[in-house]
Length: 77
Image (tube, rainbow, N blue to C red):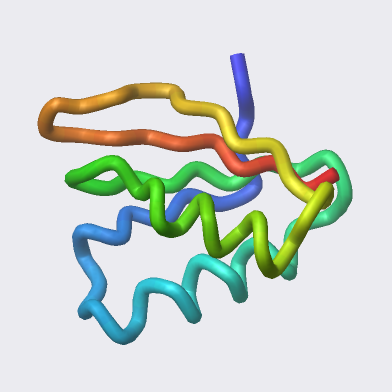
């Protein structure tokens, strides 16, 4: 079972606050730490942005895939 260094439920944030909160939290992770992201839809566009901003520096694992709640573990590597 994964343990999380941080959990972000982006459903509770305004649109303009989401990415700064997510990326700021990811940058604070130590190597090997995982953050949990909770959303109400598949955050595939966010995955693409991670691929651009942090290539080869993260692992993306779907923990729950809808239909109402999506949970992703993002590990810093």
